[in-house]
Image (tube, rainbow, N blue to C red):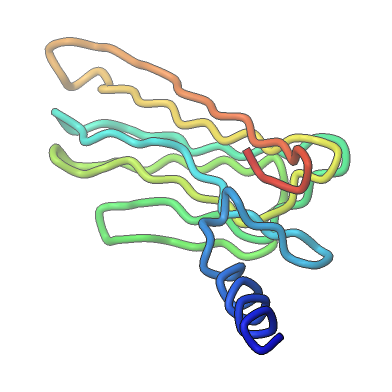
Length: 136
């Protein structure tokens, strides 16, 4: 009997240690939604964008600048900001929120701009949904 109680207590205590993608907290569910970034090979303008659809909720947006991470709490949506990142900097965008029955869409766009020999741009998006209590 003691072993069963100890095992149950141990399993309950491990629940908060799971990764956010696999964890479901009691109402409201908070997920750490992020998008895979990349290290820039040259100076670029980066536009970070976040949108929430239907029942989705975003409590904060964190993005990378040359000066480090910047967090905006309770942002107006859709959220968009453009920063200039130096060569070697890494694009990073993270949202805390709850997709609910909707979706949270994270996007970044890069543009090397007119002052570089090769003008190029790219866009990457990731959609987060809540399925069976898990953010994915």
